[in-house]
Image: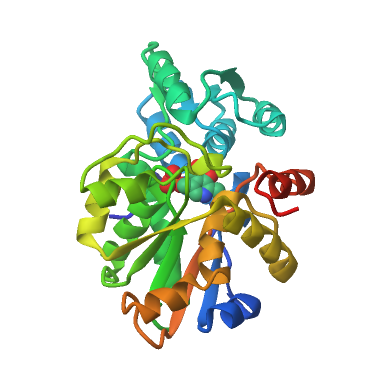
Amino acid sequence: MAIQLGRGEKPFHIVSPLLESLPLSKVAGTKVYMKLENVQPAGSFKIRGIGCLCQEAAKKGYHHFVCSSGGNAGLAAAYAAKKLGLPVTIVVPSTTSQTTVHKLEELGAEVEVSGQVWDDANKRALELAKTEGWVSIHPFDHPLVWQGHSSLVQELKDSLDTKPDAILLAVGGGGLLAGVVAGLQEVGWQDIPIVAAETRGAHSFHAALAAGQLISLPDITSVAKCLGAKKVAARALECAQECQVISQVVEDAEAVRAVELFLDDERMLVQPACGATLALLYEGRLQRLQREGRLPTPLGSVVVVVCGGSSIQLAQLQALKRQVGLE
Ligand SMILES: Cc1ncc(COP(=O)(O)O)c(C=O)c1O
């Protein structure tokens, strides 16, 4: 169900552009539309769901937000808090770059560093959220976050003449997946297959699907840190029962190479989390899934969710390339 905002109350996200990509279409052998979430305020799709959760929390009278996030969810929460004129504490793991911490502070957030991975930071955030009047803004595991994200599918329905044959997206904790599934169910498109990308070392969704239950990865070893929830939301597994979700794991090097190719092809710089999804196209995964009979042949069109990410600059891309052995 669409969120009912109060009179005069607008969501914080924009209706993002949907563009056909000739280079991506060529490489994938099918028409590829890019849903450009990288141009959202705060740099990713996260503002859709986090913005929605923050607006609802403010309406309920909470007066301080706390969010555990190694980056984009935190940036979205800081952006929403600033819009609402409320204070926010962002708890980040120590792997978060100084540039991101600086960006959060520039948005007026108080930043606390706790632990080495997101799960550690989240424990601390939940502790802080017990303070009177404070509320936890979960980066991916909340129905309002999913409802906010679902607006992306409504926009696809509004702008596409024909239903796409697949939607490609990244999975971290599973919030984007849950939102897209909610949106597909809302518009009656629940038969569209979703290809869900993760990097090896952050593949908690893939592991859960294989085991048929939630699995906690021992550690996050991928460079795509913002896909690094050791355990996905329970809702992510349910989604795989309600829709056709094809899980794909790509290597870090493939995700980073996809970031670089996409920069050349479309002149936009995104994080490796987003590169994981783009790698599905650049590494011929769609064609492989077609050969395996897991996706239809031919495909009319597919939509790739360019989820974005603010924690990336040219120098970091160079460093990532060295780190994964591309240079
Ligand atoms: C750029 C980017 N893409 C994808 C994801 C994964 O989203 P989710 O945790 O909702 O699965 C994140 C999460 O932080 C992200 O920042």
